[in-house]
Image (cartoon, rainbow, N blue to C red):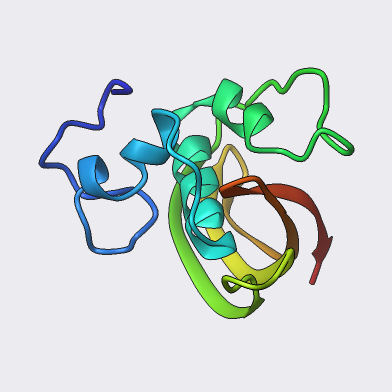
Length: 131
């Protein structure tokens, strides 16, 4: 379990659940059951500094060879505004979100519509369109 993400602590993704029951299992290797769950786990990975998980959860066709996270950025909140497709019979899904962060220049928002593809029993992040 990543440092700062104890069993009883709330999950950084804002689901209201405990990290150990929410994003923790995905970070430990469980497949994401939906695009939204993968999106939440990726936000938590940014918040916790889990660059290896972010690379691993990226679709191989679009993933970078490596990823360096900016340790001056603190990811604070995630708002999911829309999900489409990504159900049991779908191979593609979309999640529209706003992520709130704070960096050296102050508060900022990142808005994106992310695309995900089914990969075996789980999902992978493909790419996103900034909004």
